[in-house]
Amino acid sequence: MSPAVVVLKVGGEVVASPQMTTVAAGLVRLQREGRRLVLVHGGGPQLSALQQRLQIPVRQIAGRRFTDEATLEAMKMAVVGQVNVDLCAALRRAGLQPVGLHGAVLARRRPPRVYPGAGDEPLDLGLVGDVVGFDMRLLHLLWQDGRVPVLACLGVGPDALYNINADTVACALAEALQADQLVLVSDLPLLADRTDPHSRIPHLQAQQAQELLHSGAVQGGMLAKLEEACRALAQGVREVLLTTDLGDNTTRLTP
Image (cartoon, rainbow, N blue to C red; front, top):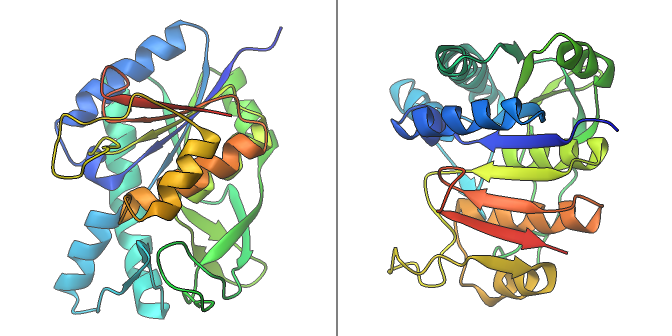
């Protein structure tokens, strides 16, 4: 019987916070239980901070970043050069053996499309990509050696690099691996009432999640998380966890 596969997405806001220590300890526990781990990370806060320092405008559409050439150059520096290194260092301090990767996601440019919460007209997000595949052989080689692959959310196309939302990468990877579990780690839980931090939703079925998406109750970055979680469930991932700590502050999504 093959080991269970867990795909985890970690936001840049988590990597830069004390919360990362708790998350790393949870990952050590999962690996000791025999799980095969693969991490995907973003770097939104770090990228926005660098864009501000470089005086590159930050444009957000439906919780997603518009990416031009200047933004993509800044992304290489912030996401690959800073967040990937910091995340791997945090995992190694916890006792894991991470390997940072930024060429394992294969992509093509995304055509204009309609996004939840952004009206009925198709939107072009610029140099943003869709996942078309992964270097699976590399992932399996690293697992066989006890390593933890850590993927940055940059996609490699035939003649260009593309920014891809890290939740999108993680969900596509979970689908490709037919993962037992997809875990989306962020700094905020999924709340029934955004003004009440104690209103965490403990469990949602896919249909309930879809209704929540279209109700307007979910906004910002959580829109992308919930949208991609629903897609992953529809493609065969057994369950998705939206969590801040791999512990009590978790929402479980099932088909």
